Image (cartoon, rainbow over all chains, first blue to last red; front, side, top):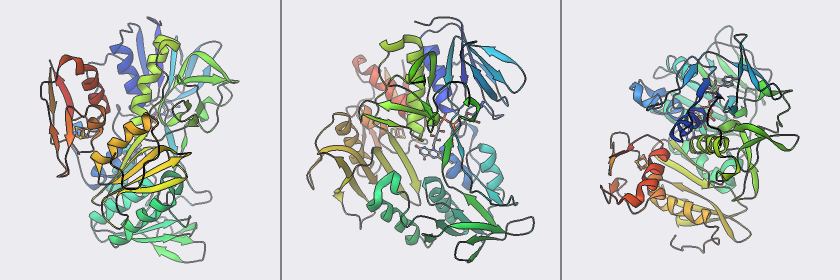
Length: 398
Length: 63
Ligand SMILES: Cc1cc2nc3c(=O)[nH]c(=O)nc-3n(C[C@H](O)[C@H](O)[C@H](O)COP(=O)(O)OP(=O)(O)OC[C@H]3O[C@@H](n4cnc5c(N)ncnc54)[C@H](O)[C@@H]3O)c2cc1C
Ligand code: SF4
């Protein structure tokens, strides 16, 4: 067991914080140092597209509780490289920090569209500062164009609609969120916008922005100009691994890890280096799949799991969760557990209702479930998936 | 041990119910009900798990 020395955590957000708290709870009595590129103490991102975009919140609804954490925070500081042999991390301040254990928790950065001009009024949404800057521009009656009908784009559309703005969502694919929820449910999610009078334009790419200094319109591939006062680019995120290039750590759409969240180098686990959260791509033994999950619960759980591995090595449990996420859009609580599979069946209610549950299966086994506003029913499936139960018959009680 | 939920923060997403259905229940009326406010000591690990998993930080343990 690693008992003393220094553990450096790069990324001072949900995964990094949970890792730090776990180290302390488990009795680690060395130094814990968290490096965070943002100037803020750890805060919660889900409200950034929901309540906080709609209006001010109390600090305790924005910042994550630190509890009794005794750790050193280096904020507004970026890690720029790792030396695996020398066992140190280089910072943009010019310092290097030696470590006995290292936790990579740098999350993800928003993607942008290539070739778009930088104009005032165009935003991405990942940080507290992004949210406050965008919120300052949301005046009732204004026109918002959301590029990308993924979860964040859809939530922003719903929030802006609630604030009395005129909202248009542009999505390049014919059905939104196919990768995340499958085609059947993707179509149902598209309908949520239409039901609220939000325009959703599918199967159309964005090729440019029009305006002098301030954005005036979004230009579509067919030449149409969609007038806009505010534009949100919500086209997904990429894992924040640029600072690890050339370090020897295996990067494959994230930090490649084994079942214990140990970072790999040339396919072998690196001693004392683990990863967690949006940046980590690990082997989940429950599904026999290498996955990267970009959701809150995974960051929280994996931060803990990675810290346990650092302290206890392979005596720590493997990280084999049933992934879970939620998305609040209009009055609908969308919740998902597990993975998308090729077999899809409505198991509660009907897709024509406001509330239903859909199950996903593969090779006769249940691997996922999604609900609209059916939290308790959905959660019953979380344990069925963990127990590797068979794919349910139509109408079967969980 | 006493389980306390801050109902101003709770969003009834039933994550705690998945962890400990003997203690937490979200009903069809959309509200969370605490079935045992003082669960037996044997359930402590589950209660700690519920505290960690609640996305809104609404669950806490006293004692
Ligand atoms: C607007 C929004 C809404 C969301 N809503 C939901 C939701 O409803 N449900 C849900 O399940 N999930 C939601 N999520 C996803 C959830 O917030 C993320 O999965 C979670 O924040 C991931 O945590 P993390 O700690 O892995 O990474 P992050 O939260 O991305 O934190 C990583 C931190 O590392 C810092 N960093 C990056 N590179 C460096 C470096 N080189 N040196 C130092 N620091 C660095 C970053 O600045 C950042 O602060 C939402 C996310 C956003 C942005
Ligand atoms: S997990 Fe938290 S928010 Fe969800 S129902 Fe339980 S107490 Fe409420």
